[in-house]
Length: 400
Image 1 (tube, rainbow, N blue to C red):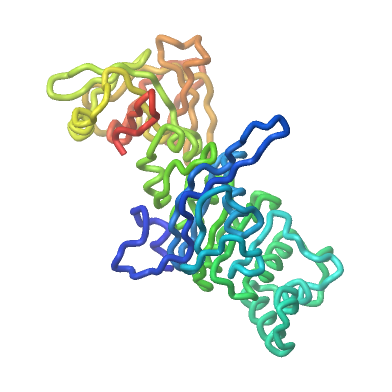
Image 2 (cartoon, one colour):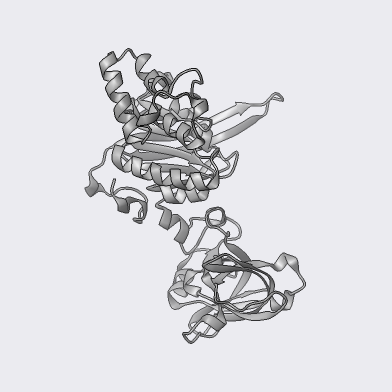
C-alpha cells in the first residue's frame, strides 16, 4: 500500500493495479427473532469486495450493523442469507479458527496471568508451532511494535497504549490473510488515540495485509482507510475513498454523518435566474454556478423543491473575502455564538430575518481573523461551488 492510497479518489482499486480479491461479501443478511416473534434485520443485503492489502473501515452510528458484519466475517455469527469468501474460498459454516483471520477486540482480551511474551505467543502455541519458531516470531513482532523490552511484563504493568500493542502483536504474530479490528482504540484517551491511529497506519504500510476496521468515529474512518464503508440501518450507504465520501456524499445521511461540524441543511425552492438557477431558503438566496445549474437541469426528478447542504467550511466572513462576490453569494446573518477554535472560528448563525429563532441556527467555520461578535449581524459569504443538493424524498445527492 502506498502513502497515496489514503487520499486517492475512486471507489476501488483500478484493474491495472492487478490486486486480487481478498474478501468477498455477497448479499449478507442477518436476521434475529425477538421474543414476541417479530424479526429484526441487523444486516440487510450487504455486498462488498475487499482487495488484497486494502484497509477498509466500516463506520456508522450505533446499531447500524457494522459490528455484526465484522462478526460474520470472523465466524462469530452466521448469516441468515448470503455468501462469504476469504481468499476466494467459501467459508460458510467454518469456525473462526478455520478462517485465515486474526481479530483485535475493543477490550484487548489479554490473559492477565500471562506475560506479554505469553500473550503474543498464545495463538502459535495452540497451533503447535515449534518453540524456536514461536520465539523468533514473538521477538520479531514485539520489535515491530516497539514493545521488545516489555516481553516479561504482565498486562497489569502496562499502559493502555502498551496493552493495545500487545493485542495487535497477538494478531500480527500469526501472519493471517485478513485482520479484523473491532473499535480497538475506543478505550484510549484522546491523545493516545491520535498516536495509535498514526501507528496503525505505519503498521499497515509495513505488514501490508488486508484489514477490516469497525468504528463509530468518523475521524478514524477518514484517516485510516483506503476506502470507507458508511452504514446505516443495516445497509451500506456508500463505499468510496475518504476524500470522495467527504466531497461527494451519495445521500443526505452520508453528508450529515461525515464531517465535523456536520453539514447544514436548508429546505429550498428553485427558480430560473437568467441562464442559471436560484435556490431560495428562508432568509437567503443563492445563484448557482453554471456547472451546477447544468447538472440540476439534467437530473431526472422534481427540482422545484430540494434540500440544500452546505458544510460549515464553505462559509466565510464576507469581510475577509478579497475577491469580488457574484450576486447571491452573500447574505446577512445574525451571530448567536462565537467559538474560537485556534486556526478557525466556529459561528452559530441565523438568517437575519430569523434572528430570534434558535431552530434556524446553522454553523459556519470561518478564518480566525474574523471580528464577528455575538449579538451582531454580519455578511456571510458562501462558496457555491461547494454546495450539495438532495432529493427530499429519497435523500439522493443529485450533484454526486
